[in-house]
Structures are given as C-alpha cells and as structure tokens.
Image (cartoon, rainbow, N blue to C red; front, top):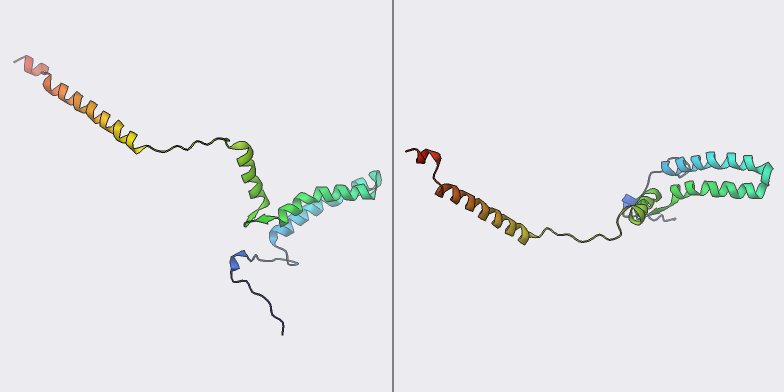
Amino acid sequence: MAYVPVPKDLSNVKTKVVFNLTKRQLICFSIALLVGLPLFFLFKNRIGTNAATLIMIFSMMPFFMLAMYEKHGQPLEVIAKHYLELRFFNPKQRPYKTNNFYAVIMRQASLDKEVKHIVTRKQNKPSKADKSR
C-alpha cells in the first residue's frame, strides 16, 4: 500500500489551478511566453537559432523568477522592494532616538514655575479699579 505524506501545517499549501500550477505561475509563464516567442522568431533568421534561443531564454528568465522564487513566504517583487528600500532609499545611519521622560518632566516643571510666577505677579499688582477708589 502506498503512503502519501500529508503536511501538518496547511498554511504553506497553495491552491493549484491548471496543470498543477498556481494562478500566479500561470500568469507569469503566459507573459514570459508572450515576450519570448516573438523575440525568438524575430531574431531567428537574422542572427541564427542559437543566439535567438539565448535571447529568448534571457528575456523570459525574469518572468520565471517572478513565478517561482519565494523566500520565507514572500514573492520576489516584495523581496526586491525591501532590498531597494534598504539599499538606496533609506538613510544609512539611523540614530536611535528616545523620548526622554526626564526632559519632559523638567520642561513641565519650568512651565509650571513660569505660570506660577505670572499668576503671583498679577495677584500682587494692584488693578486699575483699586487705584480709582
């Protein structure tokens, strides 16, 4: 009797659409076919079959990579986006900045002291109404 191993974690299992391929793979392979075949037939008579085949392969390779490559559950374009952000768009030095709670308390204490000083100064100063009496 044949035994088929069944994975216990079913979150990594992807739904297959046609020919045991996922929808993503079907779309990427179709685009690769639409790009590669016309290039092959365009260059076949001009530069020869071997060179046209190499051009076709290298033009289709990015689409195959987009369809098949996945690392830690992330597709290639997500990995490429993270790499480009890290390498080119974000600053190299990211200083660690904290919210200094002691500085906040000291600032609040100085503000309270200033307000108290203003209030006591106004209370000690006689108003115009008191002068007229």
